[in-house]
Length: 282
Image (cartoon, rainbow, N blue to C red; front, side, top):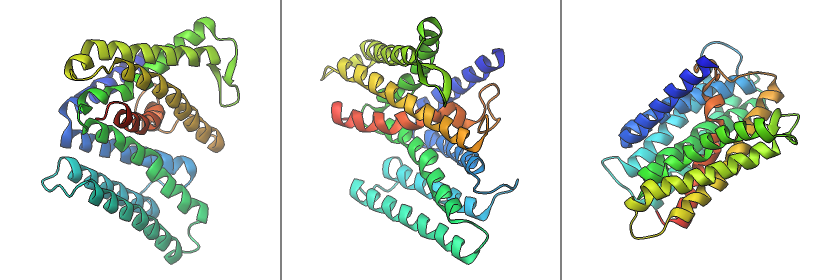
C-alpha cells in the first residue's frame, strides 16, 4: 500500500506539472504516455508476442506521432489552418493509418491474422486517441480550468467509490469483472465527484470565468464524468480478463502500467471535452 501511495502521488505531481506547463510540454508528455499505453495494449491483446518493436506495432507509433503533431499544429503550432482543415487532415490520417496497416497485413501475409490488424488499429484509437482530449481540453478557452475536471471526475470518483464501498457496499456492481466494486461505492463515487466539481468551481472557476455561472456545469461535469470513468475502468478490466493478465505493465509500482492508472481517464477526457463545449461554450 505504501508503494502504491508513493507512486500514485508521483504520478499526480507529474500530471499537475504537465498541465500547468501546458501547450507543447503537455503534448510531449501525452505522446510519451500514449506510446506507452499503446505498447501495453498491443502486448495485452496479442498484436505481437516478442520483446522488440513489431512492424505492425511500429505503424501504430507512426500514426500516434502524426496525430499528435496535427493537433499540436492546430492549437500551439506556428501555422494555424483552421478547425475544418484540421479535422480533414485527422480524418485522412485515420484512413491512411488503416490502409498502411492493411498493406503490412497483405505484404507480410500470413505473418499476421486479421484480428491482430484490427486490434492494432483499435489500440491506437482506444488509448492514444482518447488521451489526446486532455490536450484538446487544455487548449480550449478556459481550458486550463476545465481540464482539471478530467482528473477530478476520474480519480476523485475512484477514491470516493473505494471508501464508500468499504463502508456501505453490499450489492456487487460487476461481480465477474471486479468483485470488490459495489453499487453503493459507485453512487458514492459519482456524488463525491459532483461535489468536488462544485467545490472546484466555487473556489477557482467562478472567479476565472466571471461572465457566467458555471458551478452547476462543473458539478454536472463531475457527476457524468464519474459515471463514464467507472465504465472506462471496467472496460480496461474486461480486456485484462479476456486475455488473462493481472496488469498491463510495471512502470508504476503498486499500480501496474499506464493503462492501469489511466484507464478511467481515457474515457473521461473526451466526455469532459464535448460536455464543456456544450455546457460552457469553451
